[in-house]
Amino acid sequence: MTGLIRGDTRIATPTDGTIPASVKLVATAVGGYRRLVADSRFAPLLSRSNPVRHNDFDMNLVIEQIIEQADDVVSLTLAAPDGADLPIWSPGSHVDVFLPSGKQRQYSLCGDPQDRSRYRVAVRHIRDGGGGSREVHETLTVGDLLHIRGPRNAFRMVTADSYLFVAGGIGITPILPMVQEADRRGTPWRLVYLGRSRDSMPFLNELAHYTGGDVEIRPDTEFGIPDTSALLDGALPGGAVYVCGPPPVLDAARSRLSAIAASGSLHTERFSAPPVVGGTAFDVELRRSGVTLSVGAEESALTAIRRSKPDVTYSCQQGYCGTCTVRVLSGSVEHRDNSLLESERKDAMAVCVSRSVGGPLVLDL
Ligand SMILES: Cc1cc2nc3c(=O)[nH]c(=O)nc-3n(C[C@H](O)[C@H](O)[C@H](O)COP(=O)(O)OP(=O)(O)OC[C@H]3O[C@@H](n4cnc5c(N)ncnc54)[C@H](O)[C@@H]3O)c2cc1C
Image 1: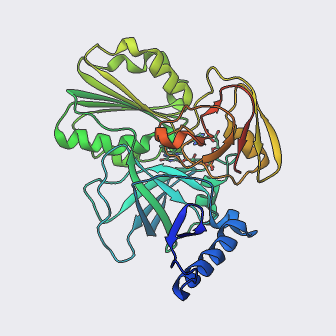
Image 2: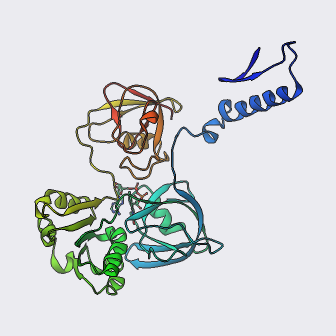
Image 3: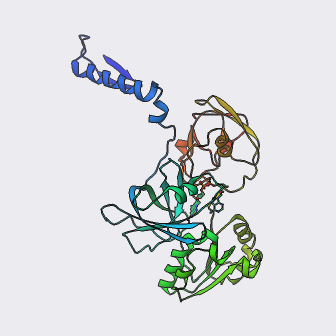
């Protein structure tokens, strides 16, 4: 005979029908757990609907130093409270920063990969943004603990005969350790660094330390608006081109792929959501919130959801971190992410990029 405790968990019970005290105890505990975690009004807080899978390190690091690196840009140096070595990272890596408000944002590591004792990130103040960078600038102080997840690298530095780096403004953060690495390896490199004015461009002084390549500093105030179509003209055969900056710089680089010899490669990283391409409008019902929203053809489901739930969790907005993954209760999803496993796609979606195949989606939100 078997006795059913919960879901499909079965345990053996004696044939005389009496239930041992130990089994009653387990059943009581499971019932209590279910009432608290699944049925109570605290359930949404205790059992989040995001089936996020991650293999990164989770750490609480202390802010050792905050330095103003340029107008509206501060750098934060982070270290383990006990001084332990931090996980290894390579140029191009970023970490997830969990801010005290619960917001999660990504920041490129811009310190020295060979210094295991500390990480450094630099953050531009986006005054009309979603509040993450504002929180960094306005509330964090030296001595605060920050929860960090990572490091993760979606912008890897390949081995190449030469490097052309193009950085726009705060896009210098992942590029700086690459410059350092190319210089250390003795590989020829060139950096074109664009910005509004010298005062707004972080790390100009540090770039002066790297003497094995060419640095071209191009503030708009001195050189005018750059001719983005010519940005890749310095790419050498067999060279790798790395571009990080605002969308017009990235778009210009991609449209000039022909400037890269067949033996070269182009690598880009964006800090903000890409435009929606080939989308159609659809509705999403947020079942737990009891609202139905219209998602426009040119916006993401996340953008529509944020209008109703500004505190919904998200991070990369490009489908690779999995932070915004939500359970799908009904509807057919066109998956555009590269974070979920096939098995997870049956009933989950990354709302920052994925959409409806047609018809409404019902989400566990
Ligand atoms: C892989 C990765 C690495 C990143 N590294 C850095 C970094 O090293 N330093 C840094 O300051 N930011 C970085 N970001 C952006 C960062 O995660 C936040 O998006 C940014 O701090 C703004 O946060 P927010 O909450 O104020 O606004 P959000 O709600 O995140 O964004 C608000 C708006 O601002 C746009 N936006 C985001 N970042 C910028 C920017 N830098 N300049 C102009 N517009 C922007 C967004 O597209 C959006 O439209 C990175 C993002 C990614 C995905």
